[in-house]
Image 1: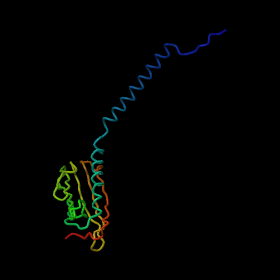
Image 2: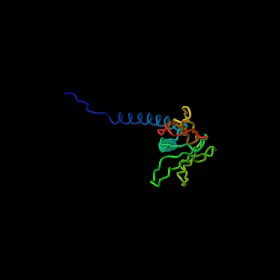
Image 3: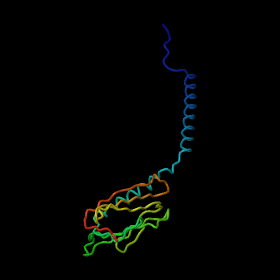
Image 4: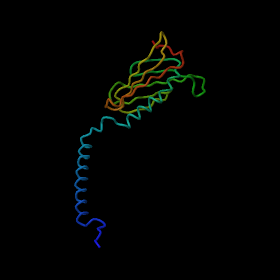
Length: 164
């Protein structure tokens, strides 16, 4: 009867482990060099998410009853009474226009920073006749142009007039 071989010899296992180690080391070196050469500043996810959160917060502007002032880097509006004091609320978003400065939100008398490191904040308006029907907000957080997002906010209250 013949001896039936059931398995690998020690030499075959050692050779295969060495070959696998060489291949793994080569792949890891290639991955390391690829990661090292990749520009990780193309999109900063944290800044982009923060900017998206701010634009989501700005949806409150859809209830605008009057636009008090509007420039490309600032706008101030009235919205209906939110705190049951009988007076409309004043909301203002403003940016200095200087890259890296923060974006501010003023709600009645409370003024606070809502986003740091702003490189672009533009407000434009869609007008139909004498009425402003939508606000377009473009926001870039951080220096990368990949961090630029834009939204169009329809003004549901058709009494929103074009500011002088």
